Length: 344
Picture 1 (cartoon, rainbow, N blue to C red):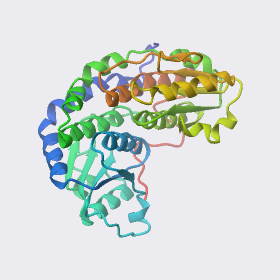
Picture 2 (cartoon, one colour):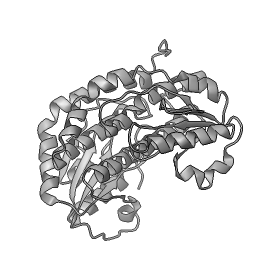
Picture 3 (tube, rainbow, N blue to C red):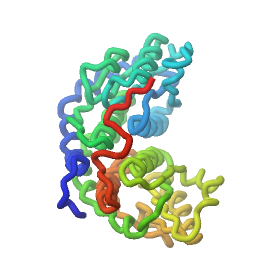
Picture 4 (cartoon, one colour):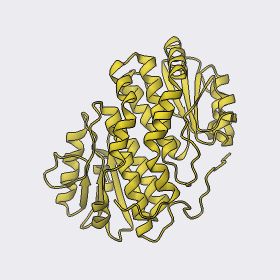
């Protein structure tokens, strides 16, 4: 993979294994304390509060919690508090607020409202102290370190790692706890994987799809956002099942599709859809060796389906940063964007 041009985004991608190791080294007691608080609460449901990449991290945690703890998770629109002043009945639940900056007014307002409504709340943030930490019952510093590129990378990954670590303590899931502890070395392998063949396939495409199921759908959502932020290419994320219910109508000859198939129960169905789209003439790359028609992209096996899915974002980040530069874009400074967006 080309690394001769060291953008901030590329440096921050390369820092992910180290940032994850730092988080795990410094936060074990905090993970255990928050996990105990969730176990004591025994929530009937969990709500998430986030926007942008943080919301994609929350989506990943939704699947992780539902698959591991068996507790349903729903995303709250921050405008419920900041605009509409809705009074929600959250006393039997828990809330997870994710915010890198910790100060977006609508996220803070929704977190405050959730805590006042009786939810056991946790803030996952890269900034302590911060308003989001003050708004929640508990706060966790994700220790991603300063992130200079506008497009979030290491803060996205560390938000998920922190959530998975808390989940492991909450549920007492020993296999998940081991998998999280092993992430720095697996991330070191994943960050070096080369997906640049997809750039050659996609060429000068102006639109593409990113597919996934379960936790990999959260990775697909983050990937689609990064395509738009850094390359100027319009990308949409869909469930590998949902794409067949309408969006497939746009898929024709040479339409690029990136299918993110994790090593879990959804791999076979995702690969089947990837092969079916390839048969329609689309350009399809899939992160699985089980495809018969679609071309494979390399991925790593971490020994756990959740961390397998999370590891897919590292080679993607490296790919999209390089493709952005190849298309004449500056991945550190996407048009019309700034690092902290303070919505109301």
